[in-house]
Length: 124
Length: 124
DNA sequence: GCATTGATTCGATCGATGTCTATATTCTGA
DNA sequence: TCAGAATATAGACATCGATCGAATCAATGC
Image (tube, rainbow over all chains, first blue to last red):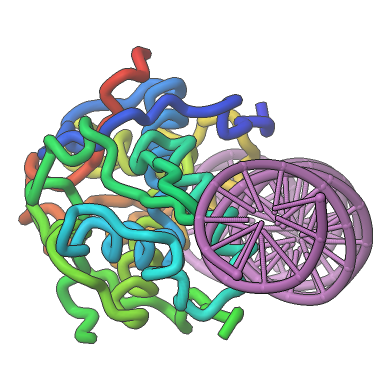
């Protein structure tokens, strides 16, 4: 019972606008694990940075070289980009020497409504 | 640069309805860490279960004894409840031998709009 | 008072995750 | 074809989080 692995790969293909509230009823263990796995992906500052940089890039896409100065090595950037790909949040395309990332269509569809809880009291 | 600690205690006093999108601009490192810390709290199935059980309990509050069968020991339940308290999501009150938990006022205010990204393809 | 029940804290452990360096892969251009 | 640049992968390692059993704290009722 202590072993809730993140599932082989929680098929989080899209993060949808808003939002089945946690407070809206008792979750099943299954649901809880699925939702937790979703949050897991977003619970990392480097991944959030990469995500926001890709999303806010002019052409809607960004070369790895454009976004990789996030304070970790290139290898680590690759690691996180892979996670975001596997989670279905980003897609990548090789073009020559470079690899470009953009938001996955389904995620992009969610558009500006894509959910991010924000803390209230915590000022930047 | 590799050490982004979760902050002494990310003052996530409330999770607000919806929602400054990640996709809406380039995050600062600071913002990324703060948001990630927020997600961190919710990225655990046991905590989600406890949260949903408290929230969906008739009186809007629940005794620990009512919600603690989530597949882990009482000690672990306490550990998670403490995290939820420290994050400002739950408040507790001792009444006799029992301790009751309810949603923190600020969180409750967010009501049914409280954000929970949901995966699209992952069926239950 | 003291035993009992409910809840929290403590100390230790185990596994997962993020990070790095080093190596491999993939492409371009001379 | 070979050197070099851009990414990705592999292997190793440190840290951190979730967990448990045991001990402690708090309140009740006998």
